[in-house]
Image (cartoon, rainbow, N blue to C red):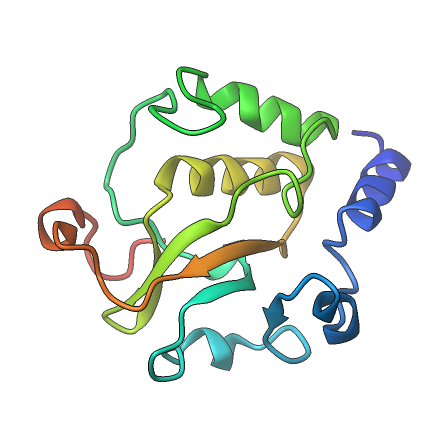
Length: 158
């Protein structure tokens, strides 16, 4: 994207300048005034689950490697690079067009169970030069039953 088109895309998607008043209409909650790395080091309040906004840069993967195509959902069978291209071109808005990433609090960090979409969002950020990107996530109350066998990352991998 050209700088002007990129800026317009970011504003249209409410990536920059998100305020709590803007979110209340959508029923989403966002942590107070960014950047707040301290928030990202805190577990969710007891018993909390639901949709909130979180910065992509603080979400960690739960897989060491991922397949190059989506296996389910709206993008089933589609190569990951197609979603990245759609994000870069502005055909897909990272905030409003994608389903929430499913996340859990584990070992002192937010871990994404939506590894392919998280990879696409991080690739998009790198390609357009973003250092901050807020996306919708769904916070699960508990770890999935198969989490221990599926969590193949080592501590500290982002």
